[in-house]
Each structure stands twice: as structure tokens, then as C-alpha cells.
Amino acid sequence: MPVMGDDGITVTIANESDIVTARQMGRALSEQVGFQGSDLTIIATAISEIARNIVTYAQRGEIVLRPVTANSRRGVVVVARDDGPGIPDIARAMQDGYSTGKTLGLGLPGARRLMDEFEIQSEVGVGTIVTMRKWLRR
Amino acid sequence: MGIPILKLGHVLIASIQDALTDNDLIQLRDDLSSQVGWSRATGVIIDVSALDVMDSFATRTLRGIADITKLRGAKTVIVGIQPDVAFAMIQLGLDLDGVTTGLDLDEGLAAIGRGDRGDAGHG
Image 1 (cartoon, chains in turn blue, yellow):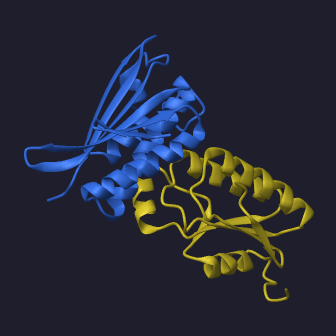
Image 2 (spheres, chains in turn red, cyan):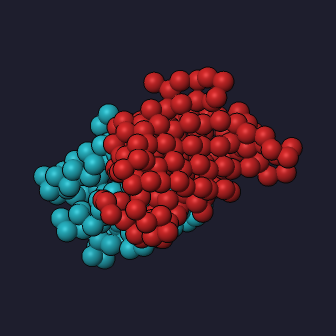
């Protein structure tokens, strides 16, 4: 079950139904922050892609969803964390259509296009952290 | 949760009502694949208007359903993709090239009728 705390909402990702939970929680939080319409769909879709990457490649991890404010802008931050195998070649993993697994290879580059900011840190044998943000349009 | 499949003449209609897990989608693919055979359907309509997200897995699975049913002698039409969902799909880099789409159930039925060897209307 998702856990709501001061640091936002944490959704444990351990199987494919958690992907649905994560994107629904992400949509609900984004709506509270003030996002509307296509932005809600975009955020939920990006969460779906990175949550699926966790299930496919790391089997287990978590997604943390938080409201953020910076320079008088409001938005949401999504952090996806796993201690899976890590990504040996991040530049390649960020290319459209590159996949080592059973996916279309659109997850990471697609999520980057959907969100305003996207960072990825990964170390082989240690894990992967994806951080992405979407800002409310003023 | 299984997705109910209705039969209308020679057309199977799967109307998705809820958020779908990957397993639900795979179940739908398998159900439609077998039902096309024993119901002798010539068309399949999948109504996705209730879906608020179509990610890469959903899109790939729907395309797979269209390919499989085609090999089984039935044409699949995906109807009801919402504008916001279509926008997010394009941003993500997804398309449904080669799969017939329609705005709603009526358009889906019309698209299947047109593909019906020109004898649509004979029922």
C-alpha cells in the first residue's frame, strides 16, 4: 500500500499492479498541486513507464511522489529508485528503441520527453535512481 | 479482473471500464484470440475511452491483438482514444500505425462493415 508522509507518497513497486497504483497516486497528487487535463495524463504516463522499468529490470523498487516549489514555481517530483542490476550504458539506454529486455525501449527517453526535467543515476550492481519533475505552467 | 467481451452479430466488442494492469491486457489478448475462433467473428472492437493512460505496454499489446486477430480472420478497430491520451502517446513516441482506429463504437462498426468484402448490410 502507498505510504503518505512528510516526504510525500511512497509506492512500493514489486509487481505489475503496483504500476497502476503508482500512476493513479501520481495523478491524484498532481491534481492537488493544480495540474489539469493533458498534464495529468502526461505525468501518469511517465510514471507508468519508469515503474514498468523497475518491474522489468530490477523486479523491486519504489516510487516517491512529492509536491515541489522552487523560484515561486510549483510542480511535482517523481523519484524512482531500485537496487537492481543498474544500467551499464546510460547514453544508450536514453536512445529511442534501445532495449535489453522485453520492452519497446521507449520508457526512459519517452519519460524524459513527457516531463520537464529528467535525471538518471545508475551504477552497475548497485541500482538506478530516476528523478523527474513537471512544473505548473504560469 | 476480466474484461467483458460482448458479441454483436459477427463483431466482438471489448469495452474497457477500468484501469488495466499488464495481466488484464494479456488476458484480453488471449480471450479475444480464442473467441474470434469459436464465435466466427469477422471484427473486433476495443473501446478504450475509459483509459486515462496508454503507455508503451498497453499500446504494444493492443497492436498485438490487432495482428493476432488479423491472422485469425478478423479485423480489429481501436476506438475511443481520448485527446489527452493521444497527446501523451505521441510525446512518448508511440503510434498505432497499421491499426484501424475510430472515434467511437459507431465508427468502429462502420470500419468493420467497410472491410466486409463489400457485402456489408446483408447481416
